[in-house]
Length: 453
Figure 1 (tube, one colour):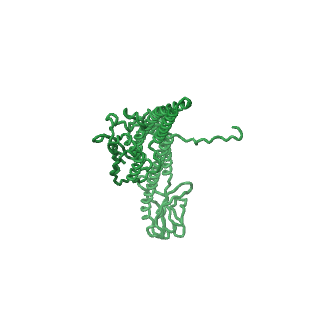
Figure 2 (cartoon, rainbow, N blue to C red):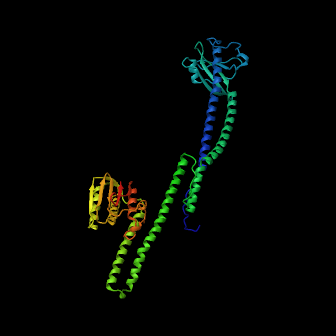
Figure 3 (tube, rainbow, N blue to C red):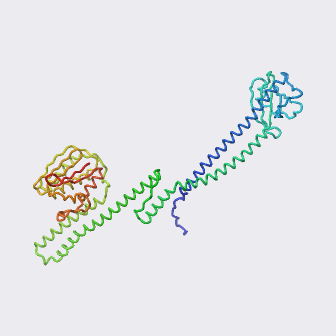
């Protein structure tokens, strides 16, 4: 690397989800096996030491009855049946002196607790001590007469050897269990994450090819299945949005071409103005201004429509009756020759005021455009439902399903001003506000539009 150049930051490398799941599964099983082995070892040790304790306890009861109150051992201490362990016996006096049978030469350790028992101030207890290199289990009890303490000991060699063998076996079981857990974890991770892998591969293919027709086959109802289902639904929504975007661009380019061509033609004609009469020149200028106004309106509608369902501003409680009243007043000023019959009931809805006002204005403009002047434009608002009815020629039944589509214009409306976007904007605003809009033939002629919020 050249001096002074800084190496670009790289994201830290992390193990894959499958590796982490396999490791987590393996560690969990290994820990469980280790805990089970430790528990088995503790239980076995407790049981083996308990057997020694029970043996010492039974033996001391027998010896306590044979030793006189003044101390001393009989010449022959009876042995247990079948040659069982007799134990190593010692008397402890309160002053710390000890006494053992003639054939026992090694003294057992005397602790303060043992002296307390010898003095009659303590109770029987077990202890473990190392004497001459051997681990002994020592049981100390007060004598029957209470003048001294009696101790009996037994080596733990057999217990230690058995526990050592058990430790080796459990260690092998733990290691084998950990290895088996690693294998099981790998299999579980590979099997459990197979749907996730398919989902990842599909996402990568969509990212690389931009092919939104890819789908994931869903054959399960668990969390992964629901994730795949939601991903397929997301792809459906993206595909529909892309299709709508392409259609919007195609329709917009087609609609923009006509006014641009007309304006260009008028400007080219005006460029040779010395050949035109003042009347023709004024007519061309007026046509150009009208075309530019339509072009500006079309561009504004396209921008508004291209925003999609994203609301401009925060939704709030809106007095819909006030919005409708103001929109009707504007419509009266723009179309002074039209009569409006207005019936408004108080209605509070949730939405963005500016967007709702645009939807209402578009419905009123549409009614004005189609009204013949013979009948009034009826505007009614009840319980959040706005009805706008004109007395025009009405909409052909075959055109009704398409009147809210972008750029759709019926055959008898193509000679009228407009871009075919007004009603599409109304539907977009209604759906973004959680409502709907519909059109239907009105009794007696004309069309009724219903905006439900």
